[in-house]
Amino acid sequence: MDLDRLGTGQPFGSIVQFAYFVEDAQKAMRDYIERLGVGPWFVAGPFTPTAAEYRGKKTDITVTLCFAYSGHMQIELIQQHSKGESVFTESLRKHGYGFHHWGVASKDYQADVARYQKQGFEIAYYDEAPMGMRVAYMDTTAFLPGMVELIEANPALDQFFTDIYKKSQNWDGRDPIRQL
Image (cartoon, rainbow, N blue to C red; front, top):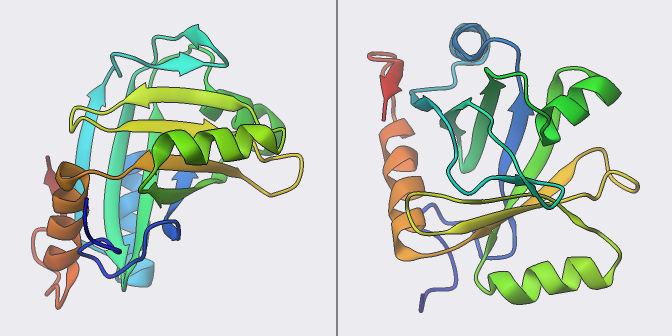
């Protein structure tokens, strides 16, 4: 990508997302809509990620991901439907439901992963999204109150984030929950 920032206005390398692990995604979205005016929400799932690895081993989890914007900041809600071990069940055991990770748009994914690893942070979760980008959740929980998700930036990711962002601008409250 030749740009310095996403179509949402956020520069590469910055936090572009706050993600929360929730027990019930439908209820959580309704709470964000009713209490904070955040929406519309875009829902992917439930689905089983095809390349998911938890702490270096293949994992079969089923999740629902929900995305919305408040201003320039994307909020992601994650519900795990299956019982398998994951970064989400790990967090649930340690802290309960709530904040899970920050998403960082990475223009140089390999270099960013290597930089975190050099600092002693391991990849707790890895996956490849259908849009052709990789994600790595770096376990920064020894120093920070959550993980850092490195999201490989590519044109498809930029288009996905930008489309949701634009639909949130001047949202009139109609059609608050939309399936992707």
